[in-house]
Length: 86
Image 1 (tube, rainbow, N blue to C red):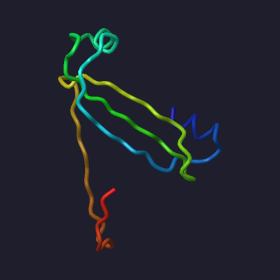
Image 2 (image 1 turned 45 degrees about the vertical axis):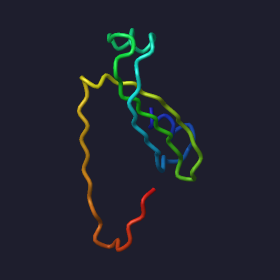
Image 3 (image 1 turned 30 degrees about the vertical axis):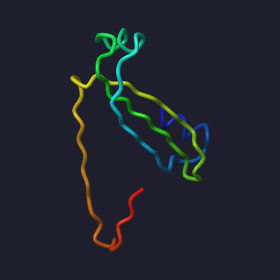
Image 4 (image 1 turned 90 degrees about the vertical axis):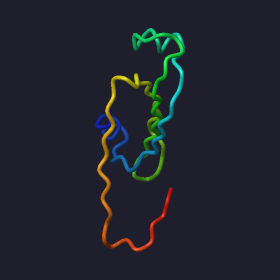
């Protein structure tokens, strides 16, 4: 999908804002995820931008909490002396 966006827009992707929150399954999500109505889900919201900061893709992805593993790799760059939270 992201390769297609870059080809159509003729410029590379630059950044994405991501939020993850806990939500309850509505009937449509529950049916698609084969879980009971009201079951706890993880909702990932991602807004992807081109390198010039124009937003090009907004998606909401619902996931069953009992079927996901989240991993991350955090690296501190030694040339950064002041940390900025965004």
